[in-house]
Image (cartoon, rainbow, N blue to C red):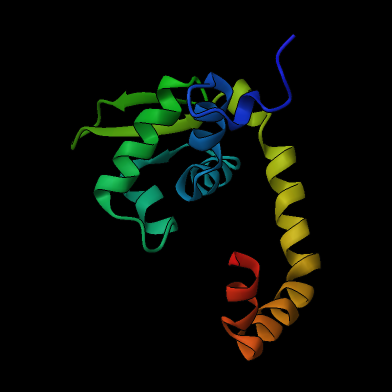
Length: 129
């Protein structure tokens, strides 16, 4: 049996997978593909702020991990369509729970940020000492 600290180890395969499925674009891509498959450009338009390079890299990681599927659409012009796989769909409930947490906790987080910003780095210096 592995230690509870194993995911904290940089060499732990679970940590790599956690990093890959919880990065900002992966969560948003899987959520966007929940309703229906999307072509690359439609997905890019849905994810405001994503660069073509970041979207391409995220899509490749998700496909490699079996969380999305890729299909070439042979219409004119040729396009690529992405869809969430059954394995990828299993991540939607935890993502939804995380989203609900952000909605419910945002006021408390904003209060904490405000408190931190007022106190500034005074506490950070004390903690570091």
